[in-house]
Each structure stands twice: as C-alpha cells, then as structure tokens.
Length: 453
Image 1 (tube, rainbow, N blue to C red):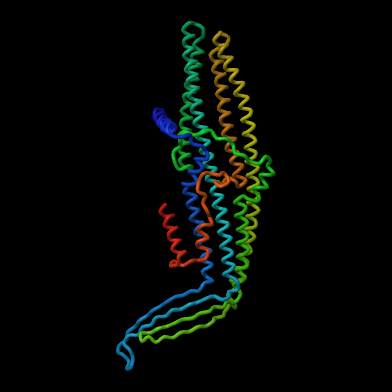
Image 2: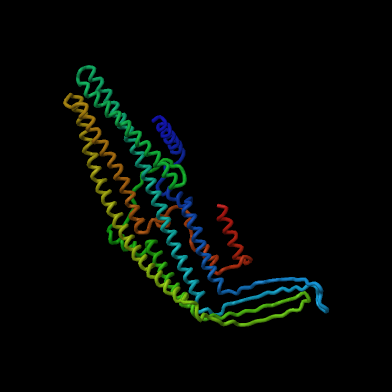
C-alpha cells in the first residue's frame, strides 16, 4: 500500500509540474504524437516502400539487360604460332520484345498490390489512433476515479469523526461508529484499487502515445453522421479494409491473365561484343523466338490455381463488407447505450446529491443514523462514478464509430502533423531508375534520411 502511494504521488507530482509549465494536453495532441512516433506505422511504411519496389522490379523486366564477362587462361606447352595466354572480354545485351503480355500484367498486378498495401497502412493508422483514444480516455477515467475515491475517504473520515463525537455524548450507539469504521476501511481499499488502475492506465498511455502523459484536458465526442444508414454507406465506399480487398481481387484477376499468357511464345532480341587479347573484336546480334509445348500440365494448373485464388479474394471482399457493416452497427449501438447512460447518470447524480444533503441535514437533527448518511453518500459516489464512465464511454464510442466508417485518419482529423505521403517514394521508383542515375542517387539520399531517423 505504501509503495502504491509513493508511486501515485510521483505520478501526480510529475503531472503537476508539467501542468504548471505547459498547457494542458488535448486528445489531438496525443494522437499527433502517436502518429509521428508509432513504431507500427514506421514498420508498415517500410513495407509499403518494399511493395513500391515490386513495381520497379516488374518494370525492369521490360528494359534491356546488359552484362559483361571476362576470362583468361594460360597453357603449357605453347602451340606453335599461338600465345601462351588467351584472354577475352564480352559485353552482352538482351531485350524482351514480346512475351504474351506477361510482364505488363505483372506490372499492373504490382501496382494494384501497392494500392492494397496503402489501404492496409491506412487501416493500421486507424488502429493506432483508436488505441490512443482508448488510452487517453482511460487515463481520464482513472484520474477521475482516484479523485472521487480520495474525496470519498475524506467524507467518510469526517463522518467517522462526527460519529465518535456523538457517541461520546450518547447521541449514537457503538454500532454507528463501527459502521463508519467499516465503510472507511472499504473506501481505502477501493482507493488503492483505483490507484492501481491509474498506474496501469498510465502504462497503456505510454505504450500507445510513446511518451508520458501530462495534464489532460477533458475530451468531447467527435461529430459523426446522424443515421446508421449514412455511416454504413460511407463505410462501404471508403473503408480501407474494403478498398484493400477490392484491390486484392483485381490482383487475383490479373494473375489469371498472367498465368494464361505464360502459354504464349516470347521474342527476345540479343547481341554481344567480344574482344580478345589481340584486340580482335567480334559482334553478333540476333532474335530468339520460343515458347512452351508441354510442361507436364504445370501451366494449366497455374491457371486453375489463380482462378481459385481469385474466388477466394472475392469471398474475402464480401467478408470485409459484412465485417465493416457489423462494426458500424456495433459501434452505433455502443454509442447509443453510452449516451443514454450518460443522460440517466446526470439525473441520478442530481437526485443523489439532493438526497445526500437532505439525509446529512436530518442526521444533524437526530432524525437519521450514521448508517443512513453513509448509504446516501455511497449512492452519490456510485452515481458520480457511473457518470464519469458514461462520459468516457460516449467519447470512445463516437471515435469507434468514426473508425468503423474508415474515417479515423490523421488527415480527416486534421491533426497538426506532417501527413505521410505514400506516393512520394513510389513516384521515385516506378520507372526502375538505375543506381548511377540522378533519380537513383536521390533515392539513396531519401533512404539514408529515413534510416537516420
């Protein structure tokens, strides 16, 4: 218990110091910090850049391939009229002129995969921001609960002192004193539990936001569509999970066409230049044409496999739509319950406050016992705790609805951050620049900057 008090005192001391030197932190501030410092987002931004490189790799298959080779050999004994050492250098080039469209289909498929990965990144961004909302509001809830329990301990301590004074003059019995002592012990136990909850809430805040919490402002619920039908319609057209599934279906369909194109012939232009140790050079150029005749049914099997994966992707799209619609409905339900609970709790607090003040006044006149006062105070405490929870739940539920619609992003929330541009890196690599080109050197500088951060 002493350790918990010491730790909690430290938390309050830090919060008080920060609050005295800086403005109170808003929910938007916390979400901005998480957006800029999330390791999960950084990880998946790197995976998106890897997907961008998949387009460059596919584009490279349409560009010339130039290679070089060199060899040298010595022989003993030396044949008459020959050199003892022979050497040559060869440069060869190859360019695909026609491959049935396989490479172009691969490029289109990689582009769709990039678009799907971007949507996956947006979905993860929603998860990161919603976790911040949960952590921020839980920190608020726990702080309010601790303050409520501390006030409860003070009130019961006063009631116990008053009961003992009245017992000394014979106005109440020993039972009244014992009741107050029991309630005080229970209140202290509940305070310890809430202090532990605050420590856990602080740890979750640090994990979600990436830093210690400061003085937190009270957050309000976010604006959302008035009807569940409007929310569902928006979710069906823009939720990242649905859009990602749509791109996955397109990828699967392109893979079918690509597998079918593998049965077509290909045409390749090739050439080479050879120079030997005597600087005698030779050159050649030619066209190669070829294609499959029989490969044991492997190509046909690849087509059927691609069709099966296409069917699976379509089913995945249907499941994504159903899941998103269910999430919207559930989120709206939670919001309606929280709103109704908050309204009822406000009325409960108002009535319980009047009742508590009346019972305490009657107790001073001898018309009520100490137990009556303690019961009334407990009812007021429960009402206030219910109101705090309902207010927190309403804010969280409103952001959950926004997430279920696919709108909980830094851009839609207008957070004061540098929005990550998923197209910037793609635009640099989509043409498959070489390492020695100006664009290739620019890419090196970009990657060095990212790695330095």
